[in-house]
Image (cartoon, rainbow, N blue to C red; front, side, top):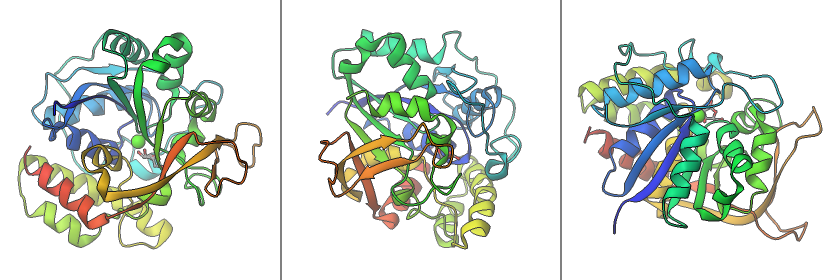
Length: 312
Ligand code: BDR
Ligand code: CA
C-alpha cells in the first residue's frame, strides 16, 4: 500500500515534537506532505521555529514547514509555558533552524493541498488548537467533502486539563473546534481519556535513553522536562504523551479502542468553555460525529515509538 498523505498541524511543544519525529520515521506508511503550525503551547513565532528545529534534528531539512494563525478566532491566546517551558521545547538546546519557513500561510497550504489532491486523499492531523483547520474550512468549504478524515488530539470525555471542564487544544480555540466538529468530516478524537493512559514512565524513558543516538538523546532531554509538570499535578509516574498518539493511531489502529459518538463543543458558558460533550451512550439520539478513542495498549504504543525513533 502506498503511504497515506497527511498534513500535521501542530504547536510544538515537546509532545508535538514526538509526533513530528514519529511521522518522519514512518515514511513507509505516512506521506507527510507538510507541517503547518499554529499558536498554542507557545506563540506562533516559537511554534514555527520549533517545528523546523525538530525537522533539522531528524535531518529532514526538505520538509516544508508553514506558519499559520497567531491567535484563536475570537478569544485571547492562552499558552502553556507552565507545561512546556519558555521556548516550548525546554529540556534540550537545539540550534536555531537554518531551513527556511515556507512563505505560504498554513491555511492556504491546507486548502491548496486538499484541492490539488484527489478527492478523499488527504488526512488532516491537528495536534494543537484547531484555528488553522477551521479557517481553511471557512475560507474554502469545498475542502470539506474532499478530506479523507481528521485524526486529532483534543478534548476529553472525563475531566479537562486546562479547566475542570476543558482540554487545552479545544479550550484555546473552542470556536474553531466547533467549526471542525460540526463540519461533517469523519473525525477520530484522541482526547485525554486515552492520552492519560500513555505515560512516559522511567522504564519507557530508559528504553529510549538506551538507544543513545543524537536524536534520542535530544528526545530524552525533552521528555525529562515534559515529565516534570504532569507528574506533580496528577501524581502519576510520567506525563501523558498526548500528540504522538495521533500518528500511532494511523500506524497501528489495533493498539486503540473507542466508539462512534456525537461530540458537541461548548462555546457559550464561560464556566465550561471548550468542553467536549461526548454522548458515549447515544442519549441525545443525534447520530455520530466522531470516533472517540478511550483506550490504548500503552506498552505497544511506546514500543512502536521507541522502535521508530531508533530509525532516525
Ligand atoms: C495538548 O495540549 C498541549 O499542551 C499538548 O501539546 C497537547 O496537544 C494536551 O492537552
Ligand atoms: Ca500540541
